[in-house]
Length: 286
Image 1: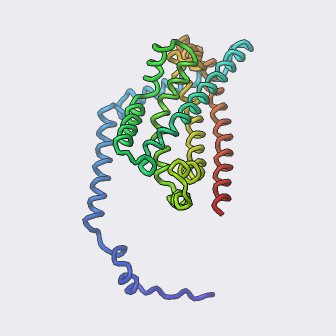
Image 2: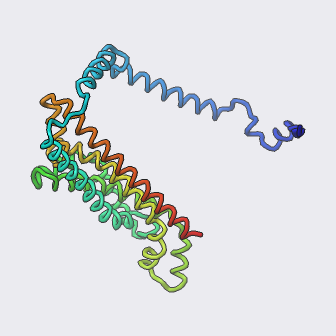
Image 3: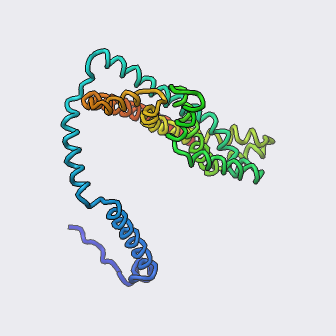
């Protein structure tokens, strides 16, 4: 058997004193913060009634509801066609809203990036505008657009587009700010202007990251389009809310199953596209 070399603890302590230090003030502070956060969590759960009888009774009622939802039953072939059409509408709402937000979010992201926008007032105003848009929930935007353009999928697409605009602007600007400056400097040294530096130096590098973010939001917005459909913004959410309201729980479970399958399929396709983009990015760097 091979002999393992002896470990010289004294030499290790000399070279790495911080790792062998005792329980210092920094670690005590970290533990105190963690303990305080845990105590605050427990206090909040007690205050909100997480440990009361309502929770235990709620689990019992949840079990009864689950039993009533099984097996999933659409209630006839006509309902299957109706729900399928509404689900396609939901996916279309999510797709149009996501792509629209990405199209408008890219120029706003460029304006919000410090390494692109040199005018500080323009950078500041763009950042605060994105913060304002992002602070309003998508459900509120759906209610606003329903009052502006009326009920239907158009209001839903506008709600998703508006809500994601703030998020895309922030995410895109952060990706642009984290990009490598050497391609831009190379273009500038060859006589290229700022616009050419952005077009050929920044965008090709950050495009896979931006595309990955757009794909993720499309998957997430498919679920969001279901929620805003409940308030009248089109899609399958209205049928789901109606099935729950009239206690057609087997029908509701069938709709939920359709949504789950659709989201899973979109997630699978999105992952394949993301891996393809990452692979192309790696090949481009080698």
